Length: 381
Ligand SMILES: C[S@@+](CC[C@H](N)C(=O)[O-])C[C@H]1O[C@@H](n2cnc3c(N)ncnc32)[C@H](O)[C@@H]1O
Figure (tube, rainbow, N blue to C red):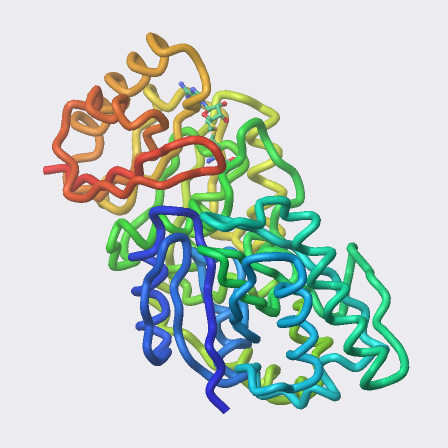
């Protein structure tokens, strides 16, 4: 049964996520704003959750219907339970909307007459549970923390789309973050830096301002062909009717290509708290035997002579002059000590990257929460 699937991502990461889905040989891959659509069966859902590095969540589209007002919204949701000719996900409605399943709905709205998203969520829930009472004589209870059915409602131009969240906890909860330092980078953004680099996985990886080590871990897992979900214990899809635990175990055993089995990692930071965080996280990510983490000044440390990947995220929240000065110094460092390396720098404010003084081979603009950041990729000759 072909399901209509949506992998969501930060705005700007769509092309990288599209490439990931294509590499996973998913069908009908189509980027849209903040997400990439594709088509597949439940195995595709499990694979996508396990393997996608730059996505936030994987959703299944259950139904879309016109909802210019609350009554239409509730009626359409009810029709889904009553199975009245709407598109739905190929799971028997009796199983999916079994009233013993708890549910929760998170709503969002754009360009629609309904703007109050809390109210939209409530009306949708009312439509679902009223129809459950009619059909089953009972209704689901609501569990906001760990629902069996995490549902998402999206209103756009008065069209309601109800989606089933198959991930549960977002995919950035990789399970290796034991400790954080100040301003840790979100895992998907770190992975996006690695993907944007078009790196062949060869040579050492250096982060001269490594903080809690996120970039080093994402780069190493990529080079070693380790799925980003390899440490995760829970997925929402495990609680859905029809989940086949043995089949998912077999998917987990499929090995990804290893680009460099001997990848070495070097993390530098001048803050001892960051060094401690990086040590713990690298150990949890099972990379401590190949990582050296040192307290030092980024600008004083000499990298290994074999070129590899320089990947870093200098602090970008602070004063403009200091940030500009950091970018200039980083540019000089790259020119002087990292000849022959590929480099990826996250420049906070889009204007700041130009102070590096090198022409990037690629720029990716990303919304990191409310902040606009640029991923800049350089070839250092
Ligand atoms: C934005 S944080 C990096 C966060 C990191 N990517 C993570 O995921 O945790 C920037 C880091 O640069 C470090 N730093 C700033 N100036 C430095 C310097 N001159 N030498 C080494 N580390 C420096 C800070 O201590 C901080 O941990």
